[in-house]
Image 1: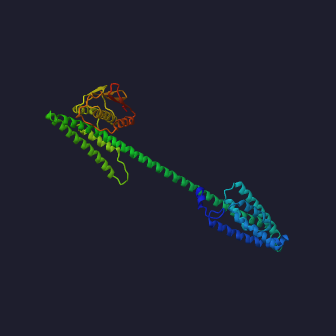
Image 2: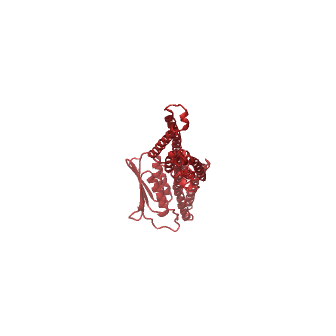
Image 3: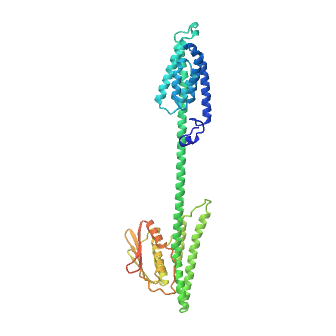
Length: 437
């Protein structure tokens, strides 16, 4: 098998221009046999040319060793074999040279030209040699014998090595092309695997973020109300025992609801991680969202709300905030209608998180919740006035700083617009517009 490109450079282990020691040994052996052949034939060449025998043998040996450079300069080998053909030597050199030339990457016109020259030279030499043969005079073979033997010998010495070399060269190029294609495919597959791993890691990160946002939206509001009621309970425990008992009951109910929601979401996460042996498998967000939505719906008292919170639950949500001591007003504009589940859940979560932020940062501030049903969209706005004087017993709710970010991500994911910021009067406003489709 052959190597190409960078692999060919790194695979070189032989001397000079040979890629392997085995190739070098083969060429040295062929050159030795060729030199021996040409040296033997140099004896007859010296007799015919009338030169000293040593000169003829030396010339033949030197010409035969040219086969040593067949891989580096195949054209030179073929030209030398053609040049010494009239001396009736170098037959092995001609055969091996033509094979190497045909198997090389040289242009076809050069190969055809040199092969034609070799064929013509061999034809002329054989015609002369057979015509002058002493044994022919004793045989009556006719005039066809000399041309037939000359043409047959010339074609037999030229065509087989040429065709074999062309076949080997074509096969080598095909193998190199297939190997390069396989290497390219392997690199592409490796790149695709790396990209798939990156996408999977990104998807896992996005899913973790969404699960965290879902848990924040579902649980944070209820826990915030628990803290507010606990602060109120602390303030009225001695002055108004009946109100304290009522607040304690509310805290207990909301605590149980929060625990139920947490257990259901964690149960989905646990069952998802145990459902398959794949390491690093992420839990489907739809399952977590469904569990969280169902838990939130049961928390607000909706028996069949397996599909999650909806806009009809805003009255209950506002009532919970009012029960915690917030002065909150809800106004609805336009004809109410049913929207897609994702749209209604996102609108509910925006209002829920906005009210939670009022509990955290503006306890006791008057708040207005507006909901507008428009032709192709639904708009909501939660605006609170500046907070009044905070009593020492007021609840101090921690803030993670992710509420506004989560609301914006939810709204933008549905193609809506989200705006939040302080008002001129010193309060805070959260506005969102979500497409109805």
